[in-house]
Image 1 (cartoon, one colour):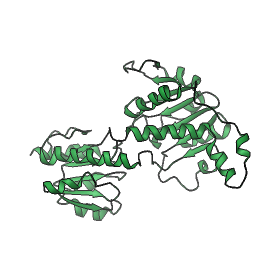
Image 2 (image 1 turned 60 degrees about the vertical axis):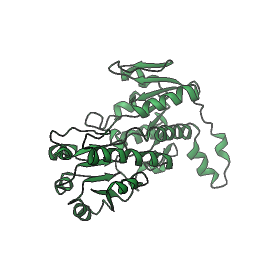
Image 3 (image 1 turned 120 degrees about the horizontal axis):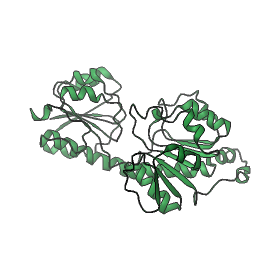
Image 4 (image 1 turned 45 degrees about the vertical axis):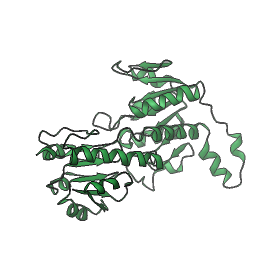
Amino acid sequence: MKIVASKNVLLDGIRPLEEEGARIVTVDCSDREGLVKELRDADALLVRLDRIDRRVLEGAPKLKLVCRFGVGVELIDIEAAEELGIYVANTPDSMTISVAEHTMLLLLAASRNQRYSQRRLEKGDFSGRNHFGRELYGKTIAIIGYGRIGREVARKCLYGFGMDVIVWDREGKYNLDEGMRGIRDLDEILPVSDYVSLHLPLNEETRNFCDAGFFNRMKMGSIFINTARGGEVVEEALIEALESGRLYAAGLDCFSSEPLDSGSRLYALDNVYMTPHSASCIEETFSRTSLDVAENVRDVLIYHRRPRGSVNSPAHPRSES
């Protein structure tokens, strides 16, 4: 069996598959011609932040699995994979801790004016200590999206920092920890929350979810955090909310286009704390993810069954033919 892996994935957990008969080839997925060539006789494709479209999939007649190092699969044409009998899988458990911890990093940085202070300190100016920040303790945070990561962030905020946690629970279905509040109506949540932390998956329903109306409903002087997907935020509306003073600050790990355009006004704002979509870039996380990817590969190529991380259900999987 041949496994094609993007050059930017960690192969530690995958290498043992070579002892089970696998041949692993690494490729630069941005070289589309090279990728298509390697996929002509490939059984599995392992990717991270690579776009896999219908053309790529149709040029891989033996491909049985596309596995994502991570959670979001919006860069993979799942409809085409479904038609072709190809499983698409992800690794939803391995990145929960690292992304939740990164969310807290952004919460703290935005609350403590870290960027403002550092810019001045680098010039030998200690005046940043006179620009007071905020405590997290006792503040209200809205968790928008209560999946694995949202739940972990909520618990860190409640138990670790003594925050008042509100979860957007529009269907009233979540089993929340004692001390958390579930509220169905977003219009009740946004005006009373000191922080809003976004953890929704990107799909047609959530694209541009945080628009001008969303930010205008947020509490004056509140802080917005996004470690989910940039496509869920109308960036111009966010910038206007920051520039106008409606928002005190924002912490962002993802953007509407990546890499972030060098001319973006976000770079000029002292009250924006940014990281390059790196919340999951942790050694322990990548090791766990690599092991989870290997299990998905074993499920499909060795045991001929649906992978444990599957996000689709082909009617006629190639792995079972």
